[in-house]
Amino acid sequence: MTHRFVAVAGAAAFCVAAASPVDAQVIRTRPFPGIFGSGDPAKSVTQVDFLSFLGGGTESNTISVGDGDLGSANQDSSFGNLVFRGRVAHQGRRTNFGANGGATTSYYSGAGSFSPLSLSGGANYSGAFGRRGTFALQQSLYYSPYYVLGVTPAPVEGAPVPPDPAESNVDPRLDQRTARLSTRGYNTFASAGRQVGQKGALFASYSLNYTDFASGVYDLLSNAVRGGYSLRMGRYTSLTAAYGLSLYEYRNSPFERLASHNALVGVGYDRPLSSWRHTTVGFNVSSAVVRDRNITRFAVNGNAHLYRRFGRTWFTGLIYSRGQQVLEGFAEPFFTFYDSLSATISGRLGRDIGLSGSVSYSHNRYSLDALSNVFDTFSGSTRLQVPVMWALAVYAEGYYSQHDFRSRLGLVQGVPTSHDRIGARAGLTVSVPVLR
Image (cartoon, rainbow, N blue to C red; front, side, top):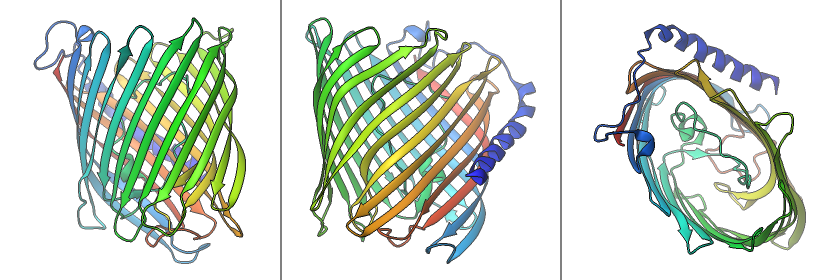
């Protein structure tokens, strides 16, 4: 683990060194209300924004395609990135609507050509119905020429949402790409809730995820339904009873569908610590019964979080999560049980300079009859952004990603057994508020 943290620290040092000379060039201006806006942007109910990144840098890759150190290789390359993104948001009296879309391309000296565009888009609609009801609808999709190996922990319920960093990074599918396998993803989510009495609430949700891979790799379809009841027992404590069923299927494969029954009957805790008003801690505990072919397994899951706000703009968080999921892009259903830990920090140095960083680590275990595999993933990034006028800013960032499998069990051709990547880039952002 030591070389991982050294790599991230080196990337962070590069960011500070590359961006600090620009500080003297900062032009301080008033917030821009938008090309077609007027008045106070904070009171606008409809917002349209456009964002573009242009940057370049260098990265180094160490790849092992076999067990142990067999077939290892080192690759160094310079690259350029070009990103376009757009966003629209509308806030009504009882409902909210939002939509976004983006495109990314890159040029790598080793490949000698531009990569195909990565495309993403989505929309969400939420609000209230009746006197006590709420609803939320979300739809997202993407296309990427790359496959990304990663474990996505379940969101921490009731935890505060961290503020946006200075700007999002260029594209995780570029910085954490694992293989040149084209991937399409679709996600649909719907939820509803209703207050019952003064302290109770009923809730239900449904999600559908479909990952469509290149020819020769099984597609993954997953469905999940969840419902339950929550009762506020005190100022910081709630009692929750919920049940969820998740179904996973490798499409057009000879493997049976996998099922995970998740039951939650326990106490949730979320409160600010008395001595630090801006510090919040919380946790939840749940259980899962997993039906994997002819094997039934029992697992204890849960999550815990610690958030801290300090100063006017700084936010830091630490999240632990334990759960299970089926990963896409494997030769057979890869039902992994994971433990993950992530940390994030964001804020501003002085009045305008934005600084953000994050790290995440997961340990994953897979076993089926006599077959077993273990792998770890780690990623980290840090970013410094300095405005030079109302629509322009310069940025510098470093990133690191790594995965390591004990063996090649389940891996498809093209996905390395282990992969370390470290890189750094600098560039220019153009952020235009079109409507306010």
